[in-house]
Length: 352
Ligand code: ATP
Image 1 (cartoon, protein in one colour):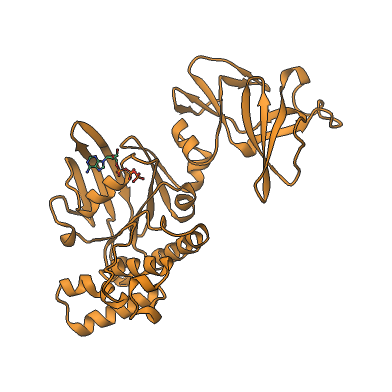
Image 2 (tube, protein in one colour):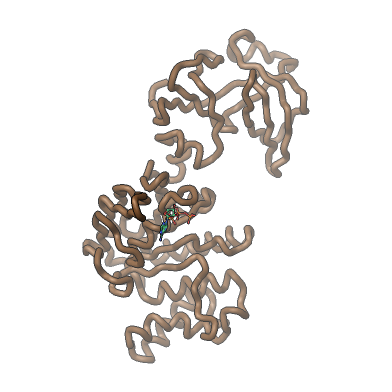
């Protein structure tokens, strides 16, 4: 399996992909390239077209336009079983009456591979996903995480050139989800298998992906590495969808907000710094008091490793993250905004 994945040179190339349902265009002229061995997530809100895109790549849904190439080969028009891809479904879609072994062997038996080869390959992937001890169990008698691994094994046993994961973790509880996403990512990197992951969960996308494609209304707004997506979002939508964002009308001049038509300043909660007005030296630091934003803490939400402080500034509410020190409700504060992101009509402006 490693050898087959290592032969990959082209990955996945989607160009001008379109899907309409009636007169609604749900995938709208979408371009995306996934390099060999890369894991790219399609991230976006419910209904933005993620699953529809994945189903067209897998061949379960016909495209209305555009091309899909896997390893340099146009697959549009081919049925799923003739495409060099394998998909893991959200609900796993395991056969309840078959053992884990038989479920995983199923795609190989459809291809009428010799019995000894089927056994070798199934045992190999069951070893990869740590499920050999459950080879004779039925799906209902193993845990959700184990069912998820069985579904992953059934995809991997086909030695696909492209692995497609449709919200593969959404049926797992929060703790198990973190563990399984680490396991999947580790295995995907070890096998070097080109992968597309569909998710609406930003933590999942940020922690598992080489790059993330943020989708909105059938289009991709930005494709970037996780860190870059957070620090250098190109649209207001991306900035608000990946991480939290305080949005303020106008632009920052000195320490103050100056209204300007069509302009919006975004600030991450960790960049909202609160200085108690009665702290010694508070007014000396930074701008003169009359040039600074002033507010009042109205709510304190413990979040474990930090506190989220809700601050009223003039007629707006800002969220601030405080690691370590918190402030009492009612505290009057100066509000310094660091690393502002400036947007005009939803698009990021690079100059300040
Ligand atoms: P979710 O995270 O909720 O699954 P998604 O981004 O995966 O969202 P899609 O499932 O791709 O979204 O759906 C995109 C849009 O297309 C939605 O508005 C959905 O209602 C619509 N849609 C999907 N399948 C069909 C269908 N077979 N017929 C008509 N409309 C459909």
